[in-house]
Image (cartoon, rainbow, N blue to C red; front, side, top):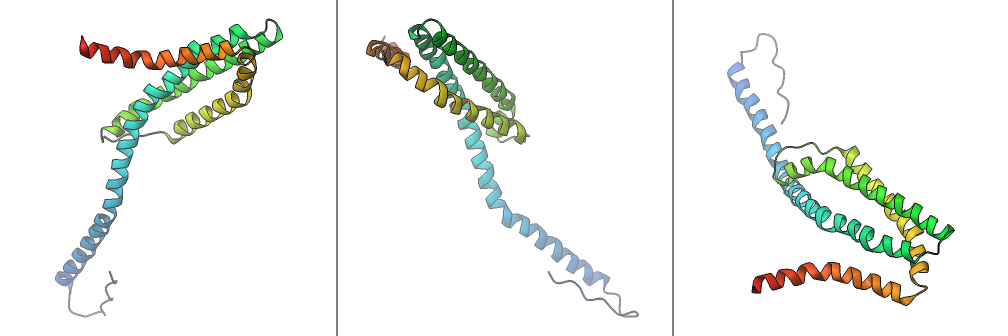
Length: 188
């Protein structure tokens, strides 16, 4: 909106007309807010969708991934490691990775209340520092595991093809059993 010209001293009082002009400025300001609204609505809808998906993903993928490592992979590598220095190295790495799993899960639990609120479309404060800390912690965990533990696991389990096959079968059974049970329950 254009700014109103100043009225010279002694000019007729334009207060009634100024009210219309001020109203126009207010209307235009509100309409500019309306113009920004579609992008904000889209962003809010996306935030709700992502928050809901992340909850399901963490609970069903990340927690299950940690459980598979701790119940299948870590014990298999520990059992197959040569007694002495190699087994001690595996033990130290497994302790670190397990502790990191708990740290990641604890960091996640601190974010869950805000994510639940966001997923339901309620106001919430999602602490950016908490989100960044979780992402950074998990990236560091994954890099360490990829660089240190998985190559060592491949070396240890690769000495005997049966151990790698047993691990594969164990993982398959963990994945297949719940699905098979749910199928048979429907028939019973």
